[in-house]
Length: 379
Image (tube, one colour):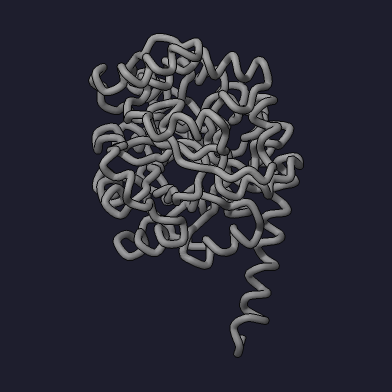
């Protein structure tokens, strides 16, 4: 586990939080959140329902770090989840925000939506910022230990606002170029998202011209990032076993982030249709078909039929396909709904989250010991 002590000067504003505490700190030298964990395991923020206060609390109870997913929620709903989490644990936790993207030209997606509309119920394409400014204001007024971002990096001024109230800023990156942008902005930790990860690719720009280029796998990405920055890394993508946790720690990550492995846990708010598809042998694939942004999900008929034609237009297509996805979920139709999952989803166990985290930590220790004692001669 990569550890470092940093000096962070924190204001004594009434709401400023120190990781692990629910009281305002005085100016002090303190450990980063990752250094305070009993086990180096982070729960991925999974928007759309799976991430719940109950899941965050369960992961924290096992010594890991949980994150709420603010994506697709209104600011009042995010505030309510923060309040519910604080009421159930004194452990530090994070909140993840979606960085806003660019508006898509309607001409880019008009034909695609016309084709879908001839077969499925679809809604109106819309563009929004997912309440970025309002949610930032909330998290400055009512801070949490960590604010993480997906789809982009906060500006240096926004990072400064969060630092001023005691929050660390974690930025999800998919390449060394993105990592350098995040470091320049003042990010404290980088979440390295490998190609194996389920759900949306966190790329700052979702350029279809990049589609022919293979995104780097997690172990490759960790090596590339450690070559350009000393910032702590949280490794994300395809981690479902203790051996997987051990692998990313050995490669240089400070912690492993698990997402798909939590989807079947009883504390997760995963819908029944999605929950039933996790753990099957069906492979995954990258697609824009449901949302207009590249995401990894379990292969089904909709992905096979529409991935090739789907344009880059997020969140416009996300909103347009909302009715067809809702109908599929209600009817238990796995062929017409997004089943976001990482490449290792078939290894999901469905056990309680605290038990899963404890088992992963124990198995990771065993894997590391075995590698040293049996595989590397002379140790």
